[in-house]
Amino acid sequence: MPPTSQPFSLSRTEFVALIAMMFATIAFSVDAMLPALPDIGAELSPEQPNRAGLILTSFVFGMGVGTFFAGPLSDAFGRKPVIYGGAAVYILSAAVAWASSSVEIMLAARILQGFGAAGPRIVSVAIVRDLFAGRDMAKIVSIVMMIFTLVPAVAPLIGSFIIAGFGWRGIFIAFILFSLLSMTWMGARMPETLAVENRRPLQMSLLTSALKELFSHPSVRVSILVQSLAMAMLFTMLMLVQPIYFDVYDRAESFPYWFGAVALFAGTASLLNAVMVGRFGMRRLVTVTLAIQIVLSSIMLGFDLGSLPGVFGFAAFVVFQTCLFFQAGLTLGNLNAIAMEPVGHIAGIAASAIAAISTVLAAVLASPVGLLFNGTVQPLVAAILVMAMAGYALMLRLGRIEARATNDS
Image (cartoon, rainbow, N blue to C red; front, side, top):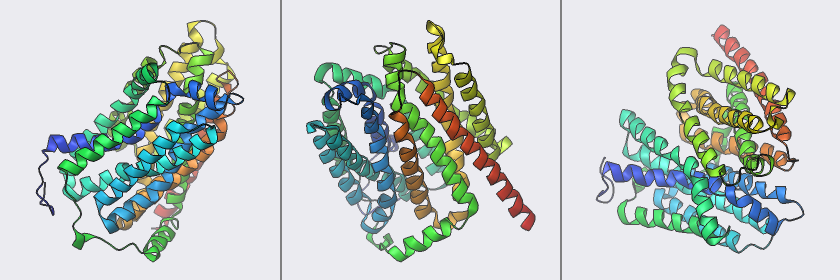
């Protein structure tokens, strides 16, 4: 590690563990909520229990908005102040959610909680970039992401244990303790990694010009839309997976274990992507993956496989869920790379803008679908089919854009 403005006392192992914990804030805040949704819906919105699913997408929406601000603010004021500020918003919002007496207050608190969570999550990437470069940076990020993929697998199980002991409000106490622990750890062990002389003033003119350039590229616009659709499919599944396991298949007790197993298996998609992307290319791999999703969703919807008797319907849904989670590993990273390709010279602002816009759009697209649950898997499968078809059509358009650019050059 290069020298910083203070003595650096962390070993590489401790540094990776701390960064992974800050990364995990998002996954823990979303997936640990899944077992709590029935209780929250019954208590805060008994007339419309499906509204409890909005607790997930409201958090994601707030995180998307916060993502746009966290990076530029940390470049101007330093990494630690922005992380502390985000954590403070996260903790206060979790306390409001804990005390909330209506679903409206809960959703507002979750939006703010997501906004705050963007600080530790986004700025932690900048910290890695401050301290490492090239292959060292790639190794650190790879190890962090490998640890990060384990969190969605165990978070629902942890959430179910907390609910069993303390009720659904105990989940928000756990969020507060989690954030306090990571902030105390960082404050005690990690110095500021961005020296004052390397900070860049926050200038709206620079942000505006960078955004104009970003959206001047047709390939960037299309890839952001497809990324939004791919994320919306994932968020839609997350919103509805709990009521489907609980109400459709009567698997409430085993839900955290099934969810964890599916998440662990789907985590291998990133390894497969690393092997396949070099051979087939990013655009083709995304296009084929979406085409496969169209076929799977059409079969699932057309033959109503989710309503098969006995274990057959449940098995069909688990396969469908696994394929959708697996799809995320074969699309999201590639789509982000496609969007970043023409704008490497403004990579920092571009990365924040792409992540923010795609996340917000995905939350907006997924939220209405969560309210359509009718005791079957049909609304979920139909929504995913429509999104996959739209994404596939856009990827064909992206192919034509790339072919035109090649011919012009």
